[in-house]
Length: 258
Length: 313
Image (cartoon, rainbow over all chains, first blue to last red; front, side, top):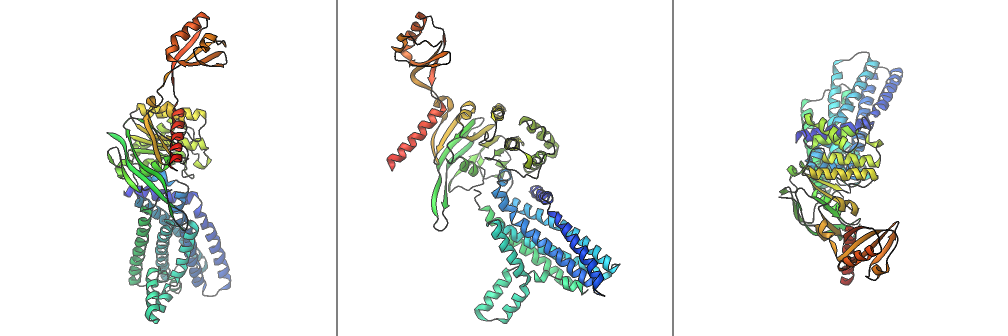
């Protein structure tokens, strides 16, 4: 079972590499090195702040775009091209296929993020000439970004299991945007009353809370990130991912592959 | 033990955008295929052949009914380790090379790493694709894709092989090779279930065939029985273009074909016809009982079903 999931994940990763998905790293490197040189010339004393802010935001944005655009095609493309037929006619359960695909995409994003993180640190070294102790906080921000990717991968897979790629992309991207303002939605729920309160509170629980995972600004300002936040964000992201993946599996298990 | 038992499987799809209406793709189908048989599943396009195969592969869920494959429930994952499947017009991961694709499918089928390399070389040789090292599938021709499709279906040495239109996209040489391959699979004791609308392939290869039309089974039987001799007729072929009047007088239907004459005649007139040819000093080439072809049987079954449907309407 685990080996089959690993084979599917490894093939998904190979597909991403061969389809030149990691070429986005070139665009990222150009953007970041250009920004570092530019910022180095125009800012005084806030080079680090700008580079960390810009770098981590770019890591997040590039990753989200990749997660959505690969994730939405993971299942629907296999059905459309009928490559799935020869996989599912083997001793592969449908849930193993979904989980394998998820880990393949998650692996692609982790590798991608690792390369981009190297870029961020290189840009930081360029503008600050040395690393300082608070720079270690960048790892926490990167860890949260990866948790965010896991949730988006799972959501993209969920939509991909019942919808067309275009609609899946719209759903996933909308959820990403709304989820980035989830704290505001929670604040609104607390301030409202009656029916509006219940609707807003319900929506705040269903929508992924990406704003809790965004510590980019805090890290850029060298503010500490508490261990409790790390733990709660980890549990939240894993739970949300598991629920979204379970939904994808439940839908896919019942789907006729015409 | 039967290799395949299809027990009243049926499939109804809901079609339409707003008002979904049921469309029956498969009437309750009951069919048994014995172990070691080459079984042809025949029918025109849209008859329900692919739907049946997809149900057996677990790709589509039946509306009702069940099936047993190699003595187990068809949904049992253990069954899938013992079956191979070639879909119609197969399409594979085009970023992989032929070797990588087979290696991946071998992994998923549980073929041990130590055996995989040897099996890959074996099956590639069997389907005539030994010279494809490093070539990605996106550069394969349609015929090559069909061959790699057959290779992946037999890679894990399955007991039962399902082939959906295996000759599709192949040139005459390729078709001949696939025919040989199916014959070889039979020799190895494997059961082969293949769908086709090319009747000459079925006639040449199958022990038994089933005919399906508009989702309904129209007939099942051994090819020899279905193509049994037409009652009371023989076919005579003799050299030359001469048709003696005495043979015509026997009521023979004669046609000149090249340097020979082909005559169909009632079998009780056989001796009289031979005597007539002797008298005329004509050289007789062959006398054979006239057999109906599978194609004739197939067309009759389809026409019969259309007539029945017309009467019902």
